[in-house]
Length: 362
Image 1 (spheres, rainbow, N blue to C red):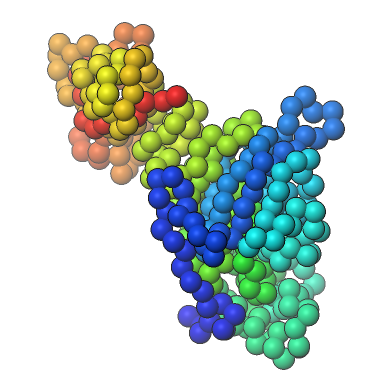
Image 2: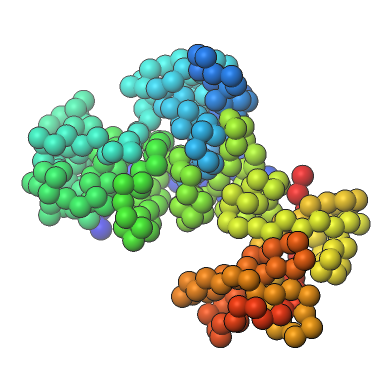
């Protein structure tokens, strides 16, 4: 890997905590406060009171279904949409009303936006127009070496694979050393195998250069794999902010539990750190009292074949590394993930046992 130019030396961000990013004035890169946007003739706001902070060098994903407001939020941060209310601060400077070119923020578009008539080196050098030519040439070549494309500098974009084009676009964006990069569904044009490989390359590159990034995606796997923290959005509002592990293990609502991975929703009566359910008394991940809904992940359930069991296997999906079962018990159908061992036949009677603490939902 190429030696980084001095402009790319950086300090790693502070560690995340369950309440969010541990921030001091020098840690905070971006502050988004009370953002609101309603488009003409729309019945409701596309974005309503969105607020979060991003640390220096932190990778964040805005995750949610189509129409939840994540792309509108990203465009407001980038300066491509003007908010109706709220503030955007970059390193303490209010940039809410500044045009995109005055914010110093990099943007990687969904279609990469490479110039087809320019070769790879010229595409990367394009982002360095204010730099002396010789210095711009050196910086562009350094960036291409950093993304592993130094030997392809003379090729045109159409001569590259989708993953290579994505890396060229990222190299061009990172060449001016922006403190923040915005990525709008950057892997959607790649096939499944290329997506996995490319997103890990992108994460490594961003961590190497020290640029913070906000990724917009509706792909939960992508958000979990790439980001340090996730902002889950629904209907224009923030539902939950946390690390991938916090979001997955302790979702705050049925929506988050169902959108981030698969969940079974079970009813119970809680008392402190325990809850009584149809599956017996279970430990809770956080204290609750009274009637509660619980998120139970499919991998938290064990299947025990039993001819007298109250449930039966009604569906099965073999996935190589594990197996997914649909288990019917009365009117309730549960999803269960089991390891790659022997398959349980359809129609087999079973008992269900939950083998971990469960999460109460709001």
